[in-house]
Image (cartoon, rainbow, N blue to C red; front, side, top):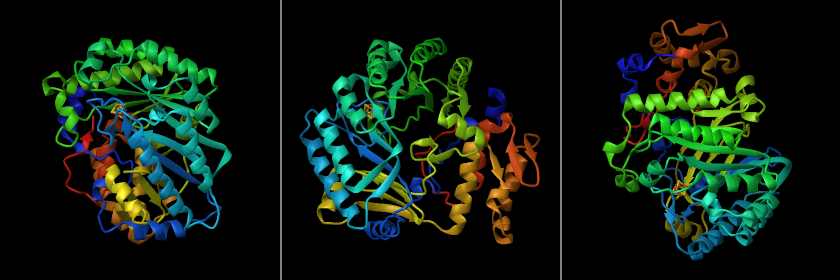
Length: 450
Ligand code: SF4
């Protein structure tokens, strides 16, 4: 792999680029797309084709300072219950466009903090979803779990609802780091939550970590990695902290001077990678790790890994239906995002309309560019055989392919059907993907590349 000085000389640490969880990236969405588009796309769904579901629960009991998620702090369940009533109305509106219940292949509850819901509300939400959707016997259902806000009864309710994977936020166990991000969560609390999940026979566990946090040291983060390894997760997501206080106001509580510099971030990421791989995990894409027998590692090996708004996924469904405030749906026609604030989401649903307020209608050129970007982000390769380009498409992407070749001089392997990045070129992948991005919205909120 290229060392720090080489990447620095190439300007990698100064770049702010999309993470390409969609193409085009969400900042390119426009306010021209709304409920009419959502209605058209819902009505055109094939009832026999399984879909993915994302449910957003935008509430937290604690508001961690590093977090840029769309969420609001609450001290009682009253706003949560009101939100669930709006969700019930949103589901009823979706149902009016379906001749029968849609089959769900994959479901994710995220937020916010889904485990803010007490068992009775977890069951209520599950029943509401069951009115509109059918879960297959092999449906995977993942839930973001806050170990400080979960107990055996909530886990039992989630398990009854079909939970197959728990995703636990850890970030870093070092007490000083936790204090400086406003998120206290001991290893013992986390272990207790993991033991409850295992006792409930939740088969798969994901752990989220963040590097680049205030006062993070290589030694301290290595200790966190050792502790995480004792939890035996099946997957780990290792995200870089993006300090954007102009967009996420809570982050202004984190002094910039406490953040590790470029070289320290680079070392933190590589140390974590080294320790996870030494523990038997395989590196997946730009920021995930999985045990070799996990479905994500298998998908990475056989070229079926995909990218969606949660990051990497094995989900092959064409349709991802987002439910709740700020959630984004992906249809074959394009993307649509619900109103971000719960008040706006509620007002729009109460008018009897779906809650979409912005989005993007895809052209065939967008689909081509999006698929190439997804291939690069997932496989570090472009499979020309799968793309089956005509002359017009070949001409369209030629400047980007040429730019990639120049950038990766000596670091690609090419055959007639495939262009593969060598391992040294992988840290450049977001820059390479950006060559294919024709949307190019000017936006200051993109995250650091490294
Ligand atoms: S990290 Fe989780 S608990 Fe903390 S504010 Fe973000 S969503 Fe809420």
